[in-house]
Amino acid sequence: MSKWWMVVAVAVMIARTADAETSHPPTIDLQMSNDARVPGHVVEQSQDEVTRIFADAGLAVRWTATAPRFTVHLVSQVLGYARALSPVMGVALRRASGSEAQVFFRQVDDFARTCHVDVSTMLAYVIAHEIGHLLLPGNAHSPTGVMQAGWDKALIRDAARGSLTFTEAQAARIRASR
Image 1 (cartoon, rainbow, N blue to C red):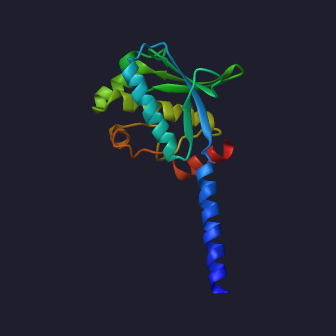
Image 2 (image 1 turned 180 degrees about the vertical axis):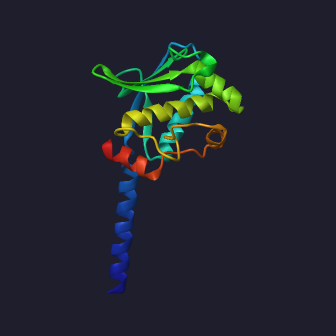
Image 3 (image 1 turned 90 degrees about the vertical axis):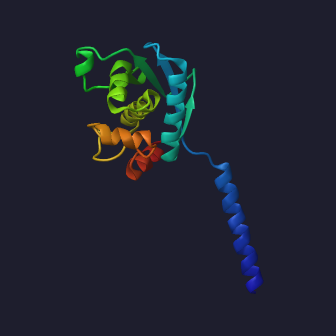
């Protein structure tokens, strides 16, 4: 009788492994619009980092030119602020025509230089933060992680090390909504 239970246990384990291998994480479709004329290698590196940030949260990112769920729009700078004085690096917009994360590249670039981090890393985290606003309900700011409202040098150092993530509760909420 014990051999029979062992065979059943192995069969169940194999079936679960096969199911896990065929299941795919929820996917977020993003499209990049580069009106700020950010160099191609910076855009590509930031896209790779955005993909990694969301993968850490159990989500796949597909960069696409057609039928995106969200558009990431890189613009030169936020209007209404002097470049050096602006605390705003991006904004999440929900419109009838589609949801968009606008990222103000001059502010991102200035902040990256001030914090002595790679601009593509800084850009990736701003993109992830703004997409987070589009994926999470209400005011999604949190005291820790990618969705913190106030960014400082310590937070950016965590980003540069790749250790800045969505909280587990945020990641679970995003996965559940997909």
